[in-house]
Structures are given as structure tokens and as C-alpha cells.
Length: 193
Image 1: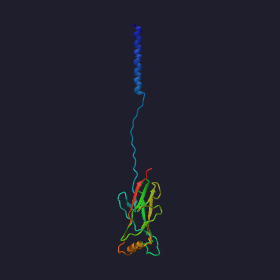
Image 2 (image 1 turned 60 degrees about the horizontal axis):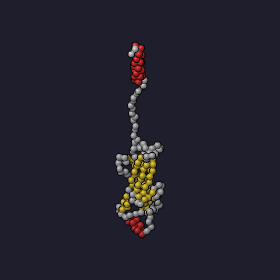
Image 3 (image 1 turned 180 degrees about the horizontal axis):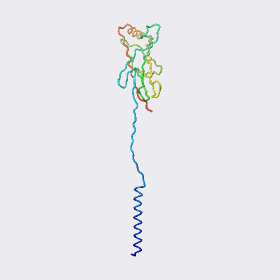
Image 4 (image 1 turned 180 degrees about the vertical axis):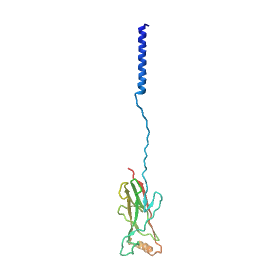
């Protein structure tokens, strides 16, 4: 090997070393890297529903008032008898709920003691009947002004105009203790899109 070829080899080796070193330096210093973490707090929407001032999210029974009786010329005020209609108010308050709510009011078969009477829920104002059950549904939007619905259960004692109906009506009217049981349930749930 000649002196020139050794010199060329030395220069080539030096150039190669310079290229490799520059590449490593460039690789090490030529990119920016950063890392970060973060979090966000999310507030859960409130769910609180009242029926006639009772919070049904905490208690499963509520109280109904006796009702508002329609004036009837032939019956003393605030009493029920054949031919009389009344409404029983059910107030659903969604003020404490921060979501849109759907509700269903269900009235099961009414019981009259001592004798069965033809007391019904009238199918009007959105009330529907299936078998011996009446239902009404509604929605209270989360952004609606006035988030309280008062639903009236339209009660009516139908005059049957038959011998058996008249006998039952007379038995109830002459009983020392007359009891009318109206089972009402309210179900509320969040409306999901």
C-alpha cells in the first residue's frame, strides 16, 4: 500500500467518522419531544323527583288529597255518590332533576267496600284504559320553565241504571263505613335520546 493510498484511506475513514458522528449528533438534537397529562372534572346531573311534596327518590309512598268534587245540585258538596265526578290531583315536581324526565301515572282497579260500585277513571285528558288499569304519561324537559306538572285523575261514579247497580249503590250509601281505595303509582325515569 502506498503512502497516498494510506492517506486516502485515512481521509475516507475520517470523513466516514465525521458523517457518523454528525448523524448521531443530528439524531440526538434534531427533534423536539414533549409529554403532558391532564384531567377534567365532570359534574353528574342531579336526579330528584317529588310527588305531592314527597321525594320519591328517597321514599316509595306518597299522600293523595281527597280530591276536588264537581258541584252537583243533588249531592252535598265534597261527597261522592252515583253521578258525581271528582279530580284527584297528583303533582309531579322535577325541579330538582337536571335531566329530562318521563313519567307514568297508573291507577289500578278501584275497590269499594262494602259493595262494588261502578267508580271509574274517565278516559279523557290523555288517560287510557287497558283492562282494569288506567294510565297517563308525560314528559318534563330539563330546560322547561316551571318544571311541575299537576295531573288530575278524573274520577266518576257512573250510575249503572240496573237493578244490581242500584242495589250496590244503595248498600254503599247506607253503610256505616264506606271505603273507596284508589291505588295510584307514579314511575319517573330519565329520557334517553
